[in-house]
Image 1 (cartoon, one colour):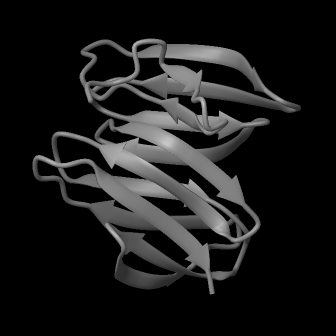
Image 2 (cartoon, rainbow, N blue to C red):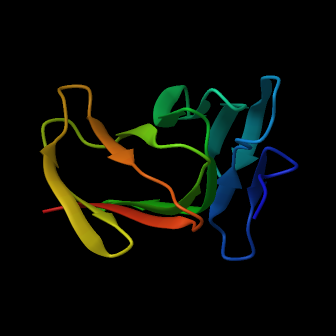
Amino acid sequence: MAGIVELIKIEESGNISFGNHLMENKKKINDFEVGADIYKVKTFANFTKLEKNGRLLFESAPGTTVYEMSLDDKGIEFYLEGDKAAAVTVELEAETYYNVFIDDRISGRLKSSVSGKVNFSVDFDEETKKIRVSKE
């Protein structure tokens, strides 16, 4: 996998993929509609950011590429690709405990902030990582 050429797209599954950590210059797409939701993506080698209806949903530094992101009332799941260890932030429910799984192995138990942010790190090797952040 080598980044999303369109910067954001709807997969056949109905999930979204976005970002391109291989880009040298920042690019963005505003007003990408998925059902009743409006997404905005900014991405390049230094960071990737996705907003949903004006609120942060995902952010990474340095940039990453996200595949097959799905979100429900239990949490968020996606595949993540990058070149370097990345600090990741997802915004979910405020002051809620979540378990973070990387490649189906528990990485930690975290409580979201008052704004709903959950922060964790992902180390990359040659493989894309499966990430799941699920409510306890």
